[in-house]
Image 1 (cartoon, rainbow, N blue to C red):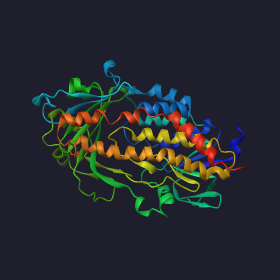
Image 2: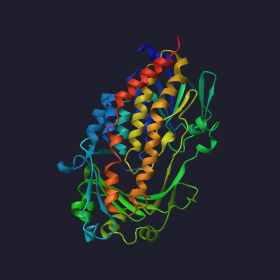
Image 3: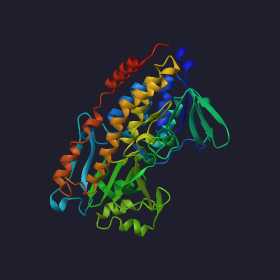
Image 4: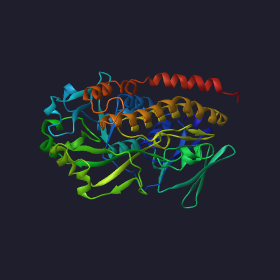
Length: 423
């Protein structure tokens, strides 16, 4: 065991993808940690997760076993010639664009290989890489986090209190740790903001998507339209994950992030779309999921408390990059915490993490929202000009996929060494 593990114990609030990724990274670097998850078990809400090449590189650097485990459950584009496709873009109108001579456009790159996994499979694989059941505790709902001297205290709903050298909030977009970090200086930036878009989600059983969409059910597709869009991609076992999105730019007036509606209301949201897409929609529950994000986050850290994943940078799903950013965050933070030999260095490590991860993550939040405007033909520069939309789509993902994580790690080490104070 690395002696550094005795110098630091980290509390991780949230046992989703972000919390598990950080736990795997800390374990690989022999840093002691405990994960606390409010749910009674792994929370697998959501059918599938799409990950880009930057994410799989981050997995490899977090712990090679994570990348190896992921490759065993990953689903990739089925057609070899579309291995490097992010998605084929088509129109949502009847005929999918054929009536105006548009037969689709591939968006991708030689640097991109699409992959994804069922959320449940991914979480279970990640949990299997943790050192044992003692490091993750289910049914522990944190209600407050505060720094007291050189320790951070976490209070739980059942009355228990735990103390750590540092606490990492991985508790999702509405997590309480965001209040702990931002509430004092930036109270107006704590809450999620509504993007003006909502989606319906559906999972189509094996064979049915092929029956409905025919040749369009082979690989990832995005069907764009005026104020609406569909995104669909295959899952393991032959299933098909899809969502139908609507842009309305009206306030979200509901008390929760979801709103139940009638099937008629759901169909009306996509009136005028291709009949095949409407048939696909029948597999969705008539439940509107509001798309919220943290468009502005002035800092990810406050003393010994730091934010990671959606609680830091919740994003809309339009670039397939939100989950991937959790792994990049986990890589940099576990790398920094693994270098700490004196707990006096913790705040400095947190600041270095913020300086490296926050600018990139916040740009992903901003550009994802911008991409949503592209999909719904409401982008101010492109509107409903399909040629401009495709050109814009082809130029907006490369910086995400090709990001140099090794350079980030080198910078993290250099910056921490510069801030390091004599013990």
